[in-house]
Length: 226
Image (cartoon, rainbow, N blue to C red; front, side):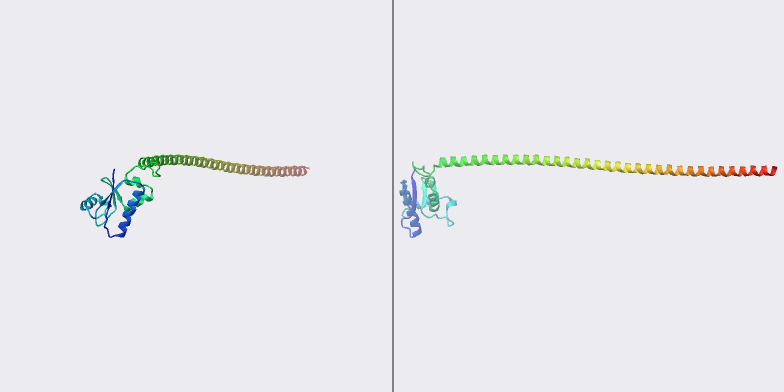
């Protein structure tokens, strides 16, 4: 695999020159084999570069500026993406090359594996979270059911207490009514007894008066006889 760096050797832009020097200098520091392709002196290089830069990576005017980096015919990126890869210590991944032994950069395969492992771990945690939420919901539902049952029992107890109180009040009313009826009955009996005693007294008085009248009549008859 050959890394191709498209440059403009006679560019009048200081910024472009600096970017080209940064890319080349960093590749040399990493001892990466690369090939410089000049687009200023070679029309074929310029046309190939323009045709192989993806449309979504081209600027608004449709003309990509150097430096542009390729791995064989595969597009790697421009200076900005190269700089981001350098900052993230991912230059080898950016170039599509395996990192050399001793490099701090993690190979793409391992990085993908780690990413996959993280996705699996995240999925497991999410499932555990959902399971925990379901358990919490079940516990909450159970507690709600218990609360409702407790409320139902409480309501039933209250209803029984009210019924007992109503029965007690009814019993009290019945007892009061019965006591009042007994008192009235006793009063009637006393009144009746008083009336009978009064009639008996009157009869006795009448009898005594009749006896006295009879005695007086007898006495008078005896006196007249004499």
